[in-house]
Length: 92
Image 1 (cartoon, rainbow, N blue to C red):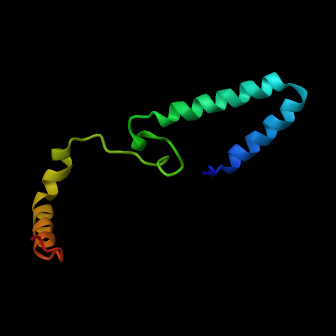
Image 2 (cartoon, rainbow, N blue to C red; image 1 turned 180 degrees about the horizontal axis):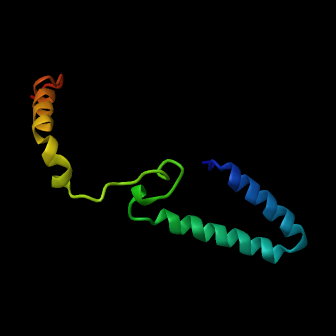
Image 3 (cartoon, helix red, strand yellow; image 1 turned 60 degrees about the vertical axis):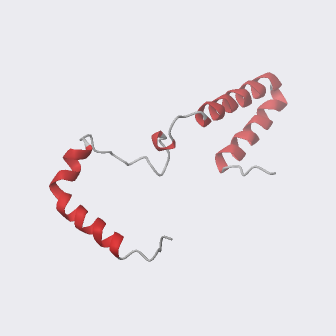
């Protein structure tokens, strides 16, 4: 299976190739460092904790669930009941 590479990975591989012509040891160190970063990022406990392009502007609220839900509890309860009554999925 072929791995899809990002533009930055392709660019970095090109730079490593050019550096490798003059200093193979430096190119090897660069490549190993980037691989170590990639492996360490794959062991994150939660994907939602990543700081990538999609989640960069996300500012989560710091309050408790009760603090967030209680002011709108009546609306949430009515909508939940409506969704339950109007669900097209039949349970057997």
